[in-house]
Length: 73
Image (cartoon, rainbow, N blue to C red; front, top):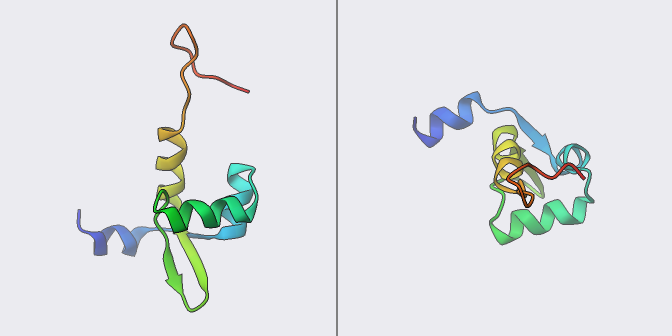
């Protein structure tokens, strides 16, 4: 699937919405965007993050426990 097809089907979230989903500050989201860890599209002075990018980031950030179980907190 091309980038254009991905974006045409993507639901975009604001930085505030991403921060709420991830339970982090907006500044943390901006750092992820600026470092390239989370893709985003810039509209004027605002950023929008594809919802699937947030899901992929969270999946890649899962920490495995000592016995192979996911950490839950």
